[in-house]
Every structure is written in C-alpha cells, then in structure tokens.
Image (cartoon, rainbow, N blue to C red):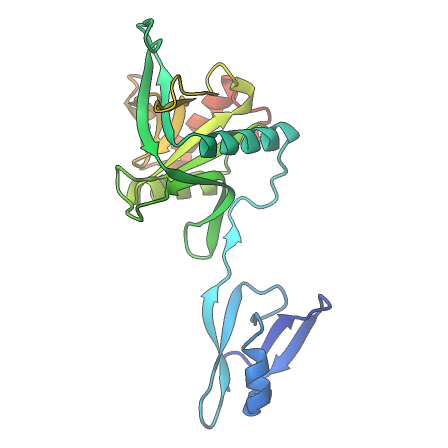
Length: 266
C-alpha cells in the first residue's frame, strides 16, 4: 500500500474534499488533481504530488508548507502606522543610511555614525522570508538591491522589525541569530516607544545626499548589537554568548523591557 492512501484539498466552496489514491488510475482525475493544492490531511502541513506510475499511480510528499514562526501576534495601530510610514520613506529616497548618534557631537552631522549605506534598494511591507524547515518569518519591511541580485556584505538583505507591544519569541530570535550568522542579512529594530529618541528618519539635506535612519539595536553576524558593540562584549557579560541562545535571548529581552523598548513582557 502507498504511504498516502488519501489526499485532501480545499474546494472552491472552502470545504475540504477527500480523494483516494485509487482514483488516480483515471487520467482525467489525475489531470484535475494536479491543479489542486493537495495535503496529507485536513489543514495538513505537507504538500502532496501525484506520481504517474504505469501500474500504481500514487501520492507522494513534495515539501512542507511553511508556517509563520510568529503566528498569532496581534499588532497595535501605532505599529501598523510606523510600518507604512517607514516603508514609504525608504522607497521615496534612493540613498539610505542606517546608523546612530554618539558623542562627540559636531555641527556637520551631529555625531551620526553610519552602520551601512545603500542606494537603489526596493522595499516592501510584510515580506515572508523562509527560515528553517517548514518555517518562515514575516518581516515588517524587507529591502534588497533593485539592480544587482548579488547577496554580499555590501549588498545584504536589510530587514526591519517594528516592535511596539511584543518582542520576538525565543524560537524566532534563535532562528534569526542563525540566519544573520550564515548569510548577509541585517535585522534592524525600530521600537515604537523609543521614537524619536532612539529611532527616527531624517530626509536628505540635498537631492543627492543620503537619508538618515536612526537605529540603535540590530542583529548581524550572529550577534545582537547595540550601536557598534556586540552585547556579549560588554565587560560584565563574560558568561553570555550566542552559543547559549536561551540565556542570550533572556538577557536581551529583559534589558530591552527594562529600558522601555516594548510594553508587554510576553
């Protein structure tokens, strides 16, 4: 007997229909079912295909259906407002700098230090990004070069997570640590309660200048950064390391909550 004797698909009336592998003996039925999103069960997590074996056609497992690693989070109105505003700002100006302010202040740029500068990036909201097997994260905003498909340190994906009420779950944070460690992706944080003190945008002074995006906290290279310092490099954190992601996550979440970066200690 085949591994999958039954397959299920959602009909046009939003009802799950069941089909037996024995029905695959019909050429017409096989053609019809190839157009359907077949699953191994109702609301199943695996997509099934049809193997057209001469004597015994049957279903086979193609791939898992990726699920949102942070599903069930209800965002605030202010979160949605900031997401739309920031994305519109990034798409309006072709040159974008992401960085922070630090002393000594000066009259030219008031101590603005760039982490990364990019130009001609395409930005979009609510972008799904595959993480681990069967999982994806939906970034509030994601950007990449319009003109060059290379993925390098000079042309990384830049993801933006806007945080108002809740910080990441531990599972999501661990996945993002691994993601930024393995490929050129930077995850920048905008904390709504810290606008405009730590997070804000500033239009360019001239048409050919870079816009400024104020960012203090971000994930890059497998670490959580505060300005230009990995958090584990602070003097009193000798035992903290991304190699112990549960402890690392707890420390960061508690610190951000204590500093008023988000509202609910989930």
